[in-house]
Length: 216
Image (cartoon, rainbow, N blue to C red; front, side):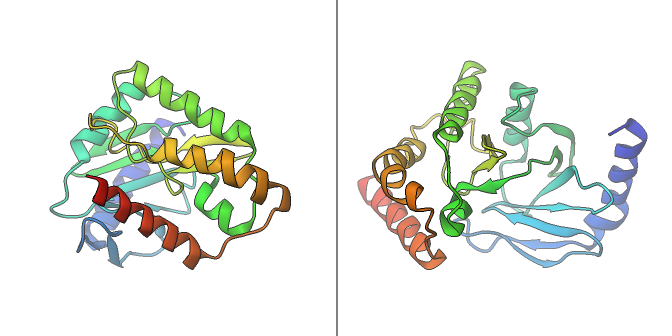
């Protein structure tokens, strides 16, 4: 995307998106709610602190907007500065006033792969491991890596959410996910290519979160 094109996107963000979007975070443990989004902007994803949207005229770029009162913008910007350019991560192209313009990553989350019965080859897991090692080499602390924060695209692994990579406390979600992958998914679900209903996946996710909170 040339400079003129990205400047046009930034102008659209300031003149149309920011004045009209209505985003709210009610519970920090649940995704934000987007009550209004001006056309033709489209909602791409919702995290606990921010929403990700895109404009169809700029399909390869996304805008991550933090909900009012929620922290994390400055920290995420610092993470992207340290990461630089890496094929498994997005890149920050512009940032101001609690929003970031990012390179769009295409793919399917491992969570959705489980639901739709899309086979996840071992290379995806190895790619994500290598990307997390790359982040550690740059003084970061990969945190909150779970099935909704990593994706697969054309057989390669991608890391979607890096917003918590400055948190120094230990996080074992990715290690636990890998254990489940190698001991349960790979020998049983992978050969069959069967999907898991979202309600079942949500029960597993909520049970894991409760057990993790109990252990603390």
